[in-house]
View: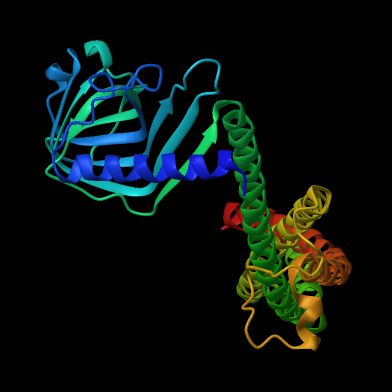
Length: 386
């Protein structure tokens, strides 16, 4: 290890110890008071995603930080050590990813400047104040109580910091893309699995509807009603004397079968209403599956294109434990693609069966609509003669 690396580790250790001791022992960290000439100065830069608590907001306007009780989220404390002569500045950072709970935290900003923040936010407790994206440079600070969960100390020479930050940002972006791809894959797999179950249910519903329609057509109720309506129409348009052969016997012609025709119509109407509702439900569901199939195809293509998931990557929608070789084709992108292909085949079969059913339904619908219209005309004519 080179001399520069040894010195960096010593500086890092001394900074971490001095900072932690200064907070726990209420000892002021004042970089402006005691820097060695040419070595240090400028205080500590404190950044936080969010700061909330019972704080003196008016005092902060003059650089006096006073938080009686509160929480700090996404805390980073940085110190730049200026070196003598032309030597490169050295940067030390302490980051805490967790929630930093503080009690009686006091501090002063460099030059009494106001801490910068982007806006107010919703605090977790009533009466607290919440600030977002806080940045300030402090020359001293002390606290009665503070905990830095998951704290990490890093260091870099100033020229290295930007490169490290860029690498860290790129790594975070990649990790986020992978998480998003995994979430998309999980949602896609669950959706395809749900649609496969729905397709099976639709097959049963379609078979039930087809059987009901075949039963109605086989019963011949429509043909029987057509015959009765023809008799009624004939009785309404014929001359009574013609009915008894012009003999003038005075016998009344037989009553038209109005009641029987109405009974048949109501039975057909019940079948027609049920079949119409089922046909509309089936069509909506089958069309919905088609739309989701097309969307799933686009999602699969996008996941393949990102290259963030391997074909056999763990499928978040399925448990990894106990997976056998036989289950290998059901996981990751390959599993999602297999589900998509299975659903596509199932949809194609459903669509073909539904088209055949709908043709028969459309014919029955036209027949029933015509018979109902004839019945309404007959009913009006019969009531007019009564």
